Amino acid sequence: MQSIFKKNSFKVMLLVSFLLLGLWFISLLGGVFILLILSVLLTFILSPLVEWLEVKGLRRAYGILVTYVLIAFALVGLLRTVLPPLVNQVISIEQSARSPGFAREIQEVQTSIQSKLPFIDFGDVSNKISQVLIQLASKWLEILTSAGSILMVLVIVPFVTFFFLKDGDAFIRGFMALIPNRYFEMTLNVLHKIGIQLGRYIRAWLTEAAIVGALSIAGLAIMGVKYAVVIGTLAGIANLIPYLGPVVGAVPAIIVSFVQTGNFGMLLPIVILFVAIRLTDDMIVVPAVYSRGVSIHPLTVVLLILIAAELEGVLGMVLAVPLYTVFRVVAKETYWGLESYGITKLEAKREAVRTG
Image 1 (cartoon, rainbow, N blue to C red):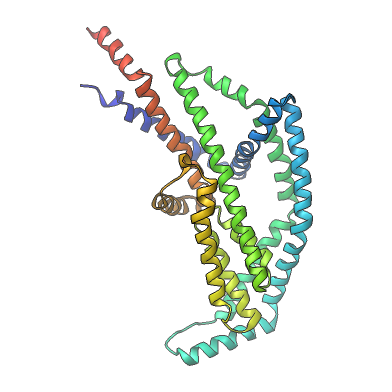
Image 2: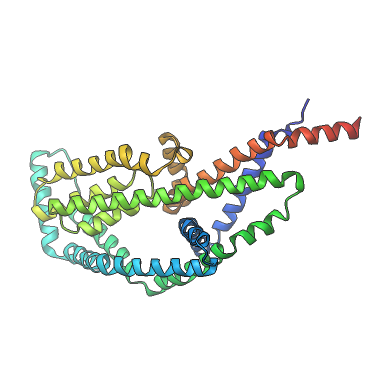
């Protein structure tokens, strides 16, 4: 009878356990871990363009530089278009939340609702809402105006990504040199599948978030809701955590519309807008941008997000599905390789010869 330690399933579980342990150790590095993750994500996003330029005859290093120049022009155009209204709207939100008129408007609506529903105890709602908006706006301004953080991202991440793109094959060759011959072909296949699946997922993931953000900004702007750029951008970023974007967009949109109009007359249109965005995302965007190979059951996604939220907070929620994609590919392709290449059977035969 084959020992449990020699079974393919045990070997796969052991490999995944080591990978999880290594990931946990790297996560202890804090900011370095975040920069490394950003560099890896950017590598997967840019690698198709760099490889295409290399196929066209451009040396890889020059292809990376050309790609960086194109991205720089695109970012400058985007920042000149989006950043000024974004900063202005965030400042306006903070100023409005600090003004006495804001608290008075909230209090008037609260009094009106309590007169109709006396059994509801709101407490000091106006103060709570003001504090939440001030904290959110201050955090946004801190991110948008923090020269140190922006400089670190704009310098270190592209620098690390450059070497990932340029010397990625060399890193893989160095790693493969450490692999025993009987595992060589299988390991190479696993790394290839991880690159394909993770690259597809990341590009689809970011595309989906951008579409949700753009639809949110456009819809709120058409409806005349103030701070549409801020709310829509927040919804797009939040959609990096699956299913969360429309919810995160709807709540501040309802609060802003209420303060803007003094009533909940825009509540239903806003809810309809974000429900429509959610349905559009599920029925059109997701099938269009995600391939079958990277699709994950919705229940699995929800469980992953809940577990990651308990372990690592917001960062864990963002990275949960991409990391799950990596581990799933590793487990699936390793098991397939052990079975297809007959490694376990070969080892069993050698063991039988030695003991026989």
